[in-house]
Image (tube, rainbow, N blue to C red; front, side, top):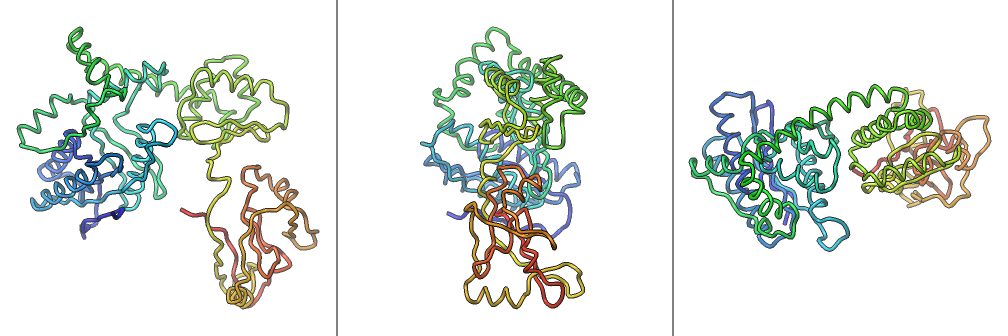
Amino acid sequence: MANSRKSPQSPKPGKRIAVALSGGLDSVVLLDTVCKAQAFQSQNIEEIWVLHIHHGLQKPADEWLEFCEKLTAQYQKKKYPVAFDFRLLHLNPSAEGNIEARARTARYEALADLCAEHQIEDLLLAHHQNDQAETVLLQLLRGAGVAGLSAMPSERMISADQGPITIWRPLLGESREALGAYAKANRLKWIEDPSNQSTRYRRNAIRKDIIPRLGKIQPEAIANLARSAQLLGDAQFLLDRLAKADGKTILNQDHLQLKPLLELHKNDLPAANNVLRYWLKLQNLAMPSQERLQSWWSDLQTVEANTQLKWLHDDHEIVLWRGQLSVVKMQEQHTAGQWVFTPLPLRSKTLGLSLEWVNQAKASGSIEERQRSGAERLQLKSKTPRKTLKNLFQENAIPPWQRQAPLLFIDGQLIAVAGLGVSFPHLIGSGKRVLPEWQPAQ
């Protein structure tokens, strides 16, 4: 099965939005309301992309994809400006970790990729009031703090390669019963996910066992839980603002300065916890448990100066190096990619490698990419000695997790190191020249 099946795009330039369509009641109602709002309220929308994520975890998944594609085609026949695309995920259900959490993370990543591909800045999701109430109860069971209990915001920004994307949840104020009534009144059809009937998943157990009982005790239980989430979201906004103020000397771009952080921890532990959590939020990482947070503080208070410290958290590494905490993606340590040779203008004063020499090396197959073995040396500037890569990395303040850099060899000679530079003795200042650059894989 292909990973994409694009509908023809609208030739008109203008704003594009996307609707995530699973084929269930909620997303079917969302798509219908969005299409009709665009047509009858003259919103400034030129195109609506319908995006479906095929998880491949259940047998009917192919049928759900076909249903979503056919539903989109029905709106196209009605002259609504809609287009369709999808992604197929390759999830291993037997792999370690919570399959629900892994599927959710992969789904958001796939939706962000689709939005970036189609230059979409606004993505609409069909979460509703019942989903919000269930999320609050799940977070309570986990012992979550204010951030977790604020559940799902009505809007939030996520990052993508092409730029930020705003996620909108326009149905958060609507109950599942209201959506069902709308679908019935408008004769909509949808599909049912059989996994929603299994109470072995915590959310389903809450939906089928807990929520109905709460409704008998308190008729407005669902609405009240959703309202509490909104109030807690307001509180979290204020906590984030406080973290910015407390972290003026601590937050340094994507890093945390250890010395002022420990000083804040000594004088005001809740404020220090708030700054640390805010930093993790900026890095799009999960909030740590109370036990893990206490363990981190214990490590930070006992670590010696200039000592490296490393924690594994949320599939990332948090590393202490030179008095700063940094977040490192696991794949950054062995980045895939390739060396490319960028031509330089003839009038440019930039030094480069001889194009003729590089072409000859390509023809003879003597261009190689290697990893460090530990004995390599390189001269980066004129009138300077050749130095070991270890010394060069230290002099250029390159952190240890970025030192497994790819090396470029031509005719058996070390020519360039990703992140450091090019061998000076091999550079020329005239004639046709190229500059080797390491291009990480996307």
